[in-house]
Length: 163
Image 1 (cartoon, rainbow, N blue to C red):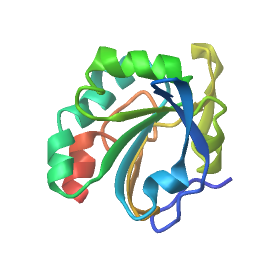
Image 2: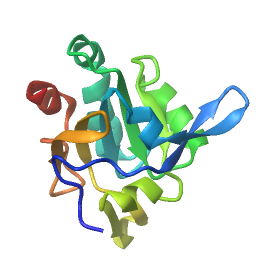
Image 3: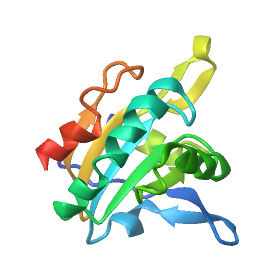
């Protein structure tokens, strides 16, 4: 599929998070319906730039996003919900109120055209680095990094300034 564009409606997909009773499905359509949501995607939990730059940029700006009316901040990675829960706790994302969702089968990532492979790094079916702001499921702002190893235009500060 072609990459997601500004003005497009986010496709529905079921992502996973850890609930009290274990993994539970989260419908992207239900999550975004009638709400203002920030979603940022990245190549992988516990990877360098993702852990040291991308997640922290949203964690340190979480209150500022909420002050601008954002209902939820969501981190999406092609990982399982167990890893996403542990990573959210390790990075402070959970404490900052960021929802950590695993796109284990890359369903959402593929549907928005953000899938890539980097065999030399052992990354297959992973997500490009991006950040978006959606209102009622419609993309209002979209920032995609050309190089998944960088976090410049997809960082929290950039998206915050665009809302």
